Length: 101
Image 1 (tube, rainbow, N blue to C red):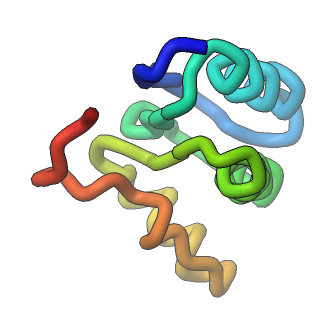
Image 2: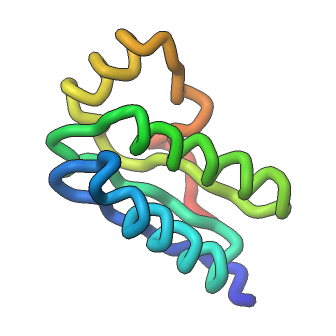
C-alpha cells in the first residue's frame, strides 16, 4: 500500500440517494492509500446519511491506523446543518496551515 494520500471530492448532493456511491469512493481510496482527504467544498446539500458516512470513515481510519480528514472550505449550508444537528466535525477538518505528508 502506498504511503501517500488521496483526495475524494464530493459534489452536489451528499445524501441517502448517493450513499452507496459516496461510501464506495471512500472505501476505494482507503484500499489504495493510508491517508484519505475528503473535499466537500462543492457539496450543495447534505443530509444525516452524508454526515454518517463521514463519521464512519473517520472511525474506520482510526480502527485501521489510517488517516481521514475533511479539507477545503465547508459550505455554509453544511455548517448550518451540522450545527442544527448538534454534531461537530471540527476534529475531522484538516488544518489549512498543516503540511500534507
